[in-house]
Image (cartoon, rainbow, N blue to C red; front, side, top):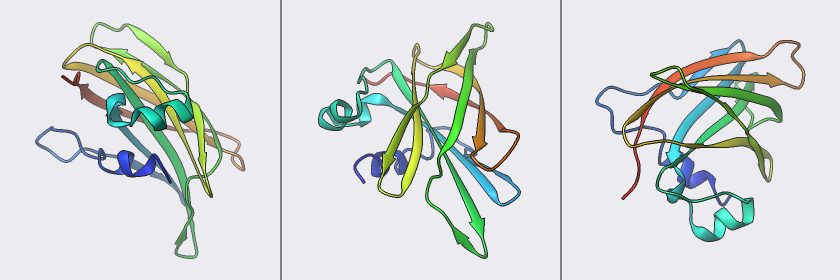
Length: 145
């Protein structure tokens, strides 16, 4: 798996309190994180058609399911969402599907200014569910220098 190690290392931001990175919905769990796109190597960015820029964050979403004590890797799902800044400017997130072996996850790019606070609302619908799960989270995004 080429990209997952970079994602795992960014599960927490530089905030002082622990940052929520998942939310449970019955036996499903939606995992979410953000990380600066420069954390991905140029080679990996090229393979997946991702743009690397110091002012661009990637929003990472994955859906797992736990049945009989066993948790799946990321499952296929329909993912959509929005990003809203503090002055209520809203942007639609365009998620790209990343499939690596048995794991599927979703990445959406977002350009931002340094220390911009963004409120995310993401809908994740499992293939076997009739309604989406909605997660809401806030991140203070930083540019990389």
